[in-house]
Image: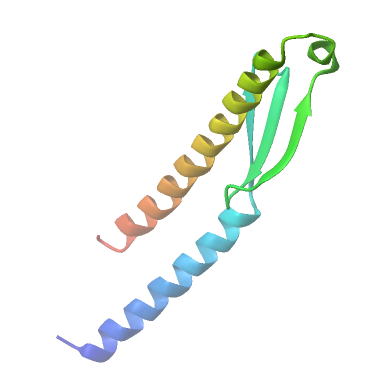
Length: 98
């Protein structure tokens, strides 16, 4: 086994992972609840970038419903981030024969 070759491969893999992380961090993922009444945008680091609430539900006295819609949209956006990370890193692992 060539140790130098192994080290080069490890360094190349590390650079690929770092670049993939940067790309995912810069991406935005949208979660939507109740046909777009609530939208949450999250970046690849799971940080909420924006929340949009349709004004038609702001007149409602149902605070619990609004909170539930925000939660649903946020969870949907987080699921999209998670799936994107799995897709990105899974394909990298297959390309490396892991």
